[in-house]
Length: 250
Image 1 (cartoon, rainbow, N blue to C red):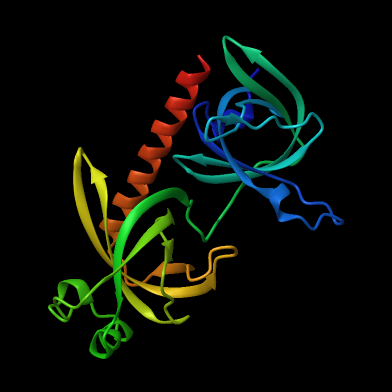
Image 2 (spheres, one colour):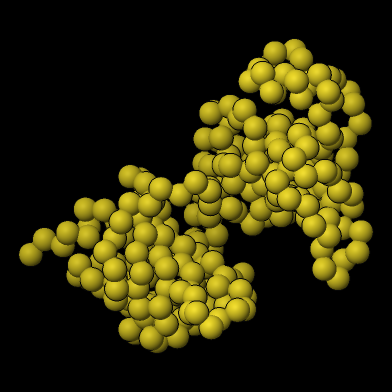
């Protein structure tokens, strides 16, 4: 008998899962997002996934726990709700059996997957003429309008996605300001520098770290090729992480 679910998701697909929040739950720490992988499709309402891990620690999902699942497939992003019905170990792999409690649906998510990292970045605010070029939808980076050799400030990227990034610095930009960001990513064994423009969405001082500020930035007028390269980099790093976790379990 054909399993219809296999038309949409396949073993090997990356998964994000988050605990379903109850009305009386106020603690967001119980709603962390964990990464996993689809191991097998057992039926149209049951699947098997690898036990999530955080760094080198297994996250033991409780039997009966209910989760919001997102499947990253070649055909897009799919979402459903599921309940943990069994935990077990098979061939040195820790697995979780889930029962789907809702239909699988195509999910149009505006945000890109955020990859946790620690990458050095340099940045500066855009000059007035650069901002004007952005507002006119000009290709600032390739039009010769970018003001050269202005001083840059150092920071550290905490997570990155195809849509933006989050970084920590010992200074604070203004919310809604436009900034220039420069950082390197490894591509085919070599470091490639990315120079991108972004809009500062939020700034907050980090609790218990006075003088350090967390910034959330959304890319502006980003080249499609750069976006695809960053997304490819993130997926490659995720695959490496999953492979290392599986190797450690074995």
